[in-house]
Image (cartoon, rainbow, N blue to C red; front, side, top):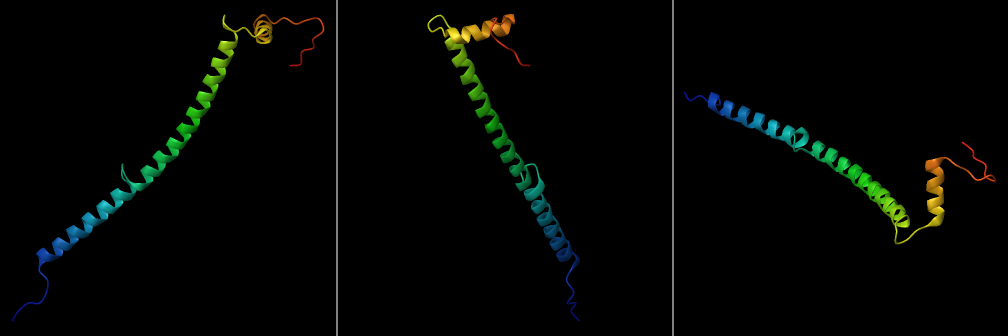
Length: 98
């Protein structure tokens, strides 16, 4: 009489293999280095690249204004505008709308 039932060891082996498979599948999808985290990082990267481009444009604009007010190159219109903004003065023929 031979017993054709699988042994307890074989059952434990397949249970452990199945459990490990589920764990690694879960970790690959939702873990710290999983697919969902990668999508979050890519979205954040795109947002940061856009912010960087905006900041570069703002810095370029400030560099342009600084150069236009420097000793080497003086833009009188810009100087007049800055003086009016800082001092809050107007010419007699100007109208201010706020």
